[in-house]
Image 1 (cartoon, one colour):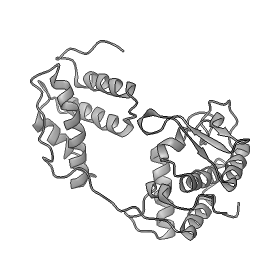
Image 2 (cartoon, helix red, strand yellow; image 1 turned 90 degrees about the vertical axis):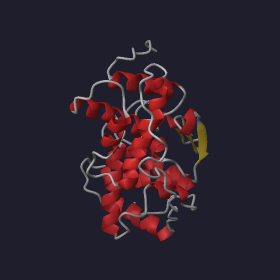
Image 3 (cartoon, one colour; image 1 turned 30 degrees about the vertical axis):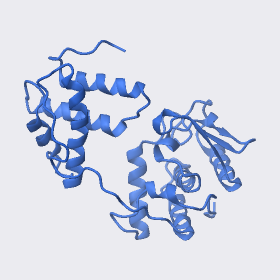
Image 4 (tube, helix red, strand yellow; image 1 turned 90 degrees about the horizontal axis):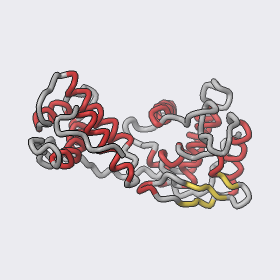
Length: 260
């Protein structure tokens, strides 16, 4: 770990240091990190000078034309969590009040997908434009795994080829929430689906990403959310409404046959 940046260091450098410290403690911070770096970019583009101020953070939180009131409050809350950390080195840093733009958290009731809805989703995924040839099977298997094993999307996308143990019917998750590892016992239908996909996916070593459209990097979360949104609209599901994350609350612990 490099030394702490000086109080006069660019905001981006301070944020990078903050993220590195927290990631050493096991926090992923993918989205939070992206938002904080966006704050640093906004400060640079608006030629902000001097300490980090509440006014700057509020302007940045409200600067996105796509962000609703709740999302703006969430953006400010992310900045608010960083500010106290930075005051230790730059005392002139200002800290927004909690809830300054309204509540940043909202409780949403999870949608419990029915077996028919899961089957419809997997069928629709299997019919995705085949470029590459295994694209449809990739999303079909991914969505089925989320539903039958209760995985978070981040856990599934970080799976490596070597994490699947066919003999023991086990899936090892090495990058779970809080940095802990755990194992998931797979239903025979889930194991069969994963093995079928593994035979058709791009080949790589045991450290290769399991869910990948090429032999290199894993699927990007944004791509997965976009595909899910397309399928949701195609199926006539509520928009906004039923979420990808809700798949993990599905009570059926088998991959429902999709005709594949």
